[in-house]
Amino acid sequence: MAEGAEGQAPSAFPSQYDESGMTSFDRVEAELRGQHLKLICEMSNGDTAEVVCNVGHDVAYAKGQLAKIKEIDYDRLSFYLDGKLMFDPLSFNDFPAIMAIGGDVIEVRVAVQVAE
Image (cartoon, rainbow, N blue to C red; front, side):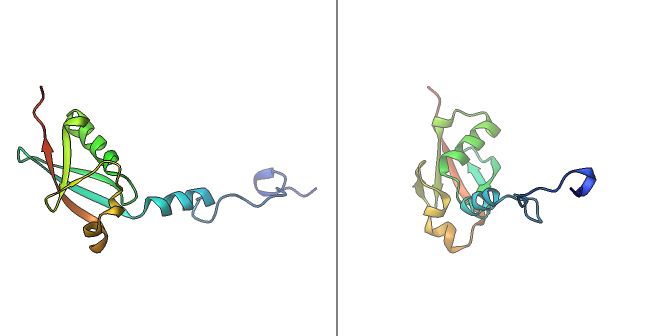
Protein backbone atom coordinates (compact mmCIF):
# COMPACT_ATOMS: atom_id res chain seq x y z
CA MET A 1 0.00 0.00 0.00
CA ALA A 2 1.38 3.39 -1.00
CA GLU A 3 1.90 5.95 1.70
CA GLY A 4 0.26 9.39 1.59
CA ALA A 5 1.54 12.73 2.83
CA GLU A 6 3.83 12.69 5.85
CA GLY A 7 4.14 8.91 5.88
CA GLN A 8 0.43 8.24 6.50
CA ALA A 9 -1.57 5.72 4.57
CA PRO A 10 -3.99 7.30 2.07
CA SER A 11 -7.59 7.59 3.23
CA ALA A 12 -10.45 5.82 1.50
CA PHE A 13 -12.62 8.86 2.22
CA PRO A 14 -12.21 12.39 0.93
CA SER A 15 -11.19 15.06 3.41
CA GLN A 16 -14.07 16.74 5.22
CA TYR A 17 -12.26 20.08 4.89
CA ASP A 18 -12.26 22.28 1.80
CA GLU A 19 -9.36 24.40 0.57
CA SER A 20 -10.21 27.17 3.07
CA GLY A 21 -10.15 24.75 6.01
CA MET A 22 -13.92 24.74 6.54
CA THR A 23 -16.19 21.73 6.73
CA SER A 24 -19.59 21.61 5.08
CA PHE A 25 -21.12 22.14 8.54
CA ASP A 26 -18.94 25.24 9.05
CA ARG A 27 -20.20 26.67 5.76
CA VAL A 28 -23.86 26.03 6.66
CA GLU A 29 -23.39 27.58 10.10
CA ALA A 30 -21.69 30.66 8.65
CA GLU A 31 -24.48 31.04 6.10
CA LEU A 32 -27.13 30.88 8.83
CA ARG A 33 -25.31 33.43 10.99
CA GLY A 34 -25.25 35.85 8.08
CA GLN A 35 -23.03 38.85 7.58
CA HIS A 36 -21.10 40.54 10.35
CA LEU A 37 -22.85 43.32 12.23
CA LYS A 38 -21.38 45.97 14.50
CA LEU A 39 -23.82 47.58 16.90
CA ILE A 40 -22.95 51.01 18.20
CA CYS A 41 -24.87 51.03 21.48
CA GLU A 42 -25.72 54.52 22.70
CA MET A 43 -26.37 54.17 26.41
CA SER A 44 -28.90 56.36 28.18
CA ASN A 45 -26.08 57.95 30.24
CA GLY A 46 -24.23 59.09 27.09
CA ASP A 47 -21.64 56.28 26.97
CA THR A 48 -21.25 54.15 23.88
CA ALA A 49 -20.16 50.55 23.45
CA GLU A 50 -19.62 48.30 20.44
CA VAL A 51 -21.08 44.82 20.18
CA VAL A 52 -19.96 42.63 17.29
CA CYS A 53 -22.31 39.87 16.19
CA ASN A 54 -24.00 38.56 13.05
CA VAL A 55 -27.29 39.43 11.38
CA GLY A 56 -28.53 35.94 12.26
CA HIS A 57 -28.01 36.46 16.01
CA ASP A 58 -30.96 37.43 18.13
CA VAL A 59 -31.33 40.61 20.15
CA ALA A 60 -30.88 38.60 23.35
CA TYR A 61 -27.35 37.60 22.27
CA ALA A 62 -26.33 41.23 21.73
CA LYS A 63 -27.90 42.31 25.01
CA GLY A 64 -25.97 39.56 26.78
CA GLN A 65 -22.71 40.73 25.23
CA LEU A 66 -23.43 44.34 26.22
CA ALA A 67 -24.36 43.26 29.75
CA LYS A 68 -20.93 41.61 30.08
CA ILE A 69 -19.06 44.59 28.62
CA LYS A 70 -20.81 47.17 30.79
CA GLU A 71 -21.30 44.89 33.83
CA ILE A 72 -25.02 45.62 33.92
CA ASP A 73 -27.72 43.06 34.68
CA TYR A 74 -29.15 41.72 31.44
CA ASP A 75 -32.77 42.28 32.49
CA ARG A 76 -32.13 46.03 32.93
CA LEU A 77 -31.30 46.55 29.23
CA SER A 78 -33.67 47.43 26.39
CA PHE A 79 -32.57 48.02 22.79
CA TYR A 80 -34.33 50.49 20.50
CA LEU A 81 -33.91 50.92 16.76
CA ASP A 82 -35.49 54.00 15.18
CA GLY A 83 -37.41 54.56 18.42
CA LYS A 84 -38.95 51.07 18.42
CA LEU A 85 -38.27 48.38 21.02
CA MET A 86 -36.22 45.45 19.73
CA PHE A 87 -37.73 42.29 21.26
CA ASP A 88 -35.34 39.61 22.54
CA PRO A 89 -36.48 36.60 20.52
CA LEU A 90 -36.14 38.42 17.19
CA SER A 91 -33.01 38.11 15.07
CA PHE A 92 -31.43 41.19 13.56
CA ASN A 93 -32.51 39.95 10.13
CA ASP A 94 -36.13 40.35 11.33
CA PHE A 95 -35.73 44.14 11.29
CA PRO A 96 -36.39 45.60 7.82
CA ALA A 97 -34.37 48.75 8.63
CA ILE A 98 -31.24 46.65 9.23
CA MET A 99 -31.74 44.52 6.14
CA ALA A 100 -32.51 47.58 3.98
CA ILE A 101 -29.08 49.09 4.64
CA GLY A 102 -27.35 45.73 4.38
CA GLY A 103 -26.26 45.47 8.00
CA ASP A 104 -22.61 46.30 8.77
CA VAL A 105 -22.82 49.18 11.31
CA ILE A 106 -26.06 49.90 13.15
CA GLU A 107 -26.74 52.44 15.88
CA VAL A 108 -29.12 51.37 18.62
CA ARG A 109 -30.30 53.29 21.65
CA VAL A 110 -30.02 51.39 24.91
CA ALA A 111 -32.26 52.17 27.87
CA VAL A 112 -31.00 51.02 31.25
CA GLN A 113 -33.61 50.57 33.96
CA VAL A 114 -32.69 51.80 37.42
CA ALA A 115 -31.67 48.98 39.76
CA GLU A 116 -34.03 48.37 42.63
